[in-house]
Length: 294
Length: 274
Image 1 (cartoon, each protein chain N blue to C red):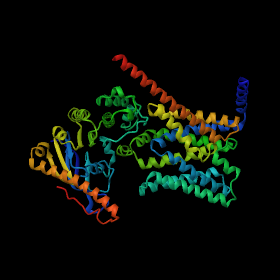
Image 2: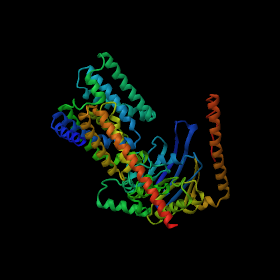
Image 3: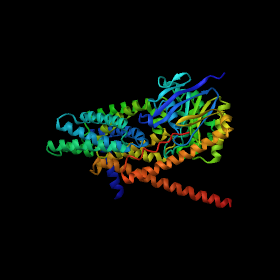
Image 4: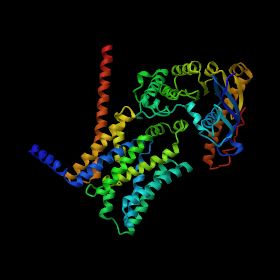
């Protein structure tokens, strides 16, 4: 009986891969997973994990402006988020306000703009709901193109500034002394992070995007020895979470954003358990060795 | 005659641009090729601020600093010839970069060329960390982490090393290893070194020149000239004691002022040094 159900589910998975909207969701999902993981690793190491949350809330304000003004919301989200991110970085540099306070300002300002405009335009619509929680059904051809172009652009830029970003993440002061223009790179990086957040919103939603940026990376950091290896593990976990999440959400009729995040949380918890078991095994074998020596 | 590697000329700096709160006041000294200059002074004497000025991290100071004949305000490229090792700080255990990756950060230009790869390996060998090259930096001890930072500084063949109290909170055995490495770099690699330290014994043994600062330059000259002069040593220990007392007094005063909500008293205890 169980075997028959499993077989049925498997056939269903192959069937759904033939649908155009699922193919678009999967292709976009892979691109989003790669860019989120790579940019996210730097955000996590710079202790700016919550910045992704702030950027997504700012994007929410931008989406509300787009829906209110009847413009393509992703474009308005791009403009609002990028300008807000640059503004808050400038503000942080010139006034030395703590990073977490800058995040709080950005987060509440974006949400405030969104809430006011939603109220003015007559409340929540299906479109707005999909931006909040993500939707695989609504990833259009235009969305897919934007996601692919943006991801390619982000990864190409990161390829050239990767070493400098690692240096800044390790020690900003030493990076500056070595001749790196830290301020300029901080601006470039925050624009890249804004683009990653906005391109991922269609799929995962405003409220869940930060977890896709953070969870694969903190999981990878438990195992990765070396920066490149950690990035590769993180990308793999990101892709696994997105693909499995999309398929499960379709088969079981669940919200895709939530399912993707829950898959990544499951991987994270499994990693913690594995790490713990590994540590215990090592301790036991060490004790045995000591006893045999005595 | 050895040529000047660094000339610090009449440098003064205040964090809030007021003459009454100068952190550095008329500091001048020269470091010649091959020198190992020990900079000593109590906490809050301005040693780290002086280094920040020398490394271009602070630019709005008065006076002039030249490194290898270049004014540091106008030409920061010259810093590529300078290695900088800051005070030890805790590196997150989960920071994923390996020793080799951290050392490679010190290379300017293409890191993957064979020549640069050899340079990285050789810098790791100099600091005796070859067997740890593939380990995460966060998993090493404090002393080993400092040696990684030295290797990172050495990989670009620096002509000058600036060390800001690099052995604070490191155990004695590791400190001794660190000191012999500094001496080796100075003597064998002919690297000029400017080294801030609280360890008078180590400065006495290793440095050929000493600069004693406490906001102002108190002494600058040969190591023997300082350590064999009882009067100077006595004045130095008194000033260090007074600096400790000043910190203690300021802390106490701040607590008192915070409690009484009186903002007038906190700036009242200015200390004019030696």
